[in-house]
Length: 444
Image (spheres, rainbow, N blue to C red):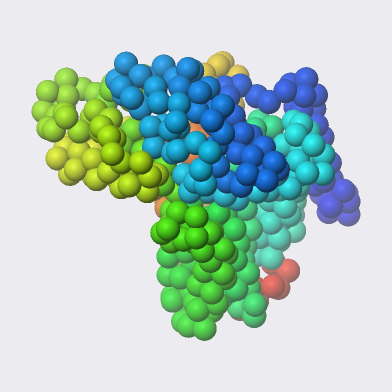
């Protein structure tokens, strides 16, 4: 351990980069499969580098119209090449997805050109940032030995290495969450951290919009600490990040859109039994027989509705009406999504290797983390990081569950597992002092 502590920074950099370089070489410079939304992100990135802004080309519209398999259920949803997903006009500025990742990738494309190496470089930079945040989080609060262990586990975690090659938001999301947790803990005692905490949440929001739900958690933590001024600083940092995006949408779309418009479509799709059946999620007969308002399961006619915002509002209205008309179905799907979020063997990548990783690595960490969190339940810092996990669990149980959506908060499990091992090994807990005075563990 002394050797690890002496050369900790070099070791952390190597453990982050070496497995990712090996994975990139193993892929032969290609992007991983399944493709998921990589094509959409790369297409939009290309439009940005060409000076067309955040939009989709007509070619992408034609491609999506010819490759979709769901048209049996969705009618014109998949067949109109002038609208992606039946909602987003081509060759027109869009607010359908978050702008952060395409803008970041475009900045790297401008330097390296449009190549898979640019995806690898961007993800690797953020992986280093995430490893640093895990190190600082644990070292400042519990000790350097525990920090080295947590950072090594985080850097080598197979799920994180795998998603470091994807041209999607996952690796950046995974990396920024420890940064936000670190800054949120710091904000209770360190001047200036409140603003940077809100700024970090705002940056993540522009990459993955579900980060907006992190802000109430940050504010609740500071309210408990009676840090009234810091509450305002967190809000200021978050709002500052959002202002350019909202102003842009007001100018090009005529409305100060904050949340991505495609969220309405996701809500409708993730509660549609016909579409869920394609993903292998079946509905019990007694629930299926009692479904009300089946007309709302059909994609609505869009005749005379030309704009993205109007179509998004119509789909949101349809999704909301269907959910309210079928509370039993929604409750069942919530439980299913909760299970998919926590499962060690689920996910879209089904193989013996992924199942083995889930059972031998993730599942023990989940059980150890739960036991350690209960043991430390009087420690306010532990309560906060566990609340991050619970927030993601609840959010994705209501919306879209799955292993991929759990990965950012697997960092919580990694931290708690490291604390468990450190306690069993007899390592003392003496943080570096950046959060001095914030240890709240009480002895009964």
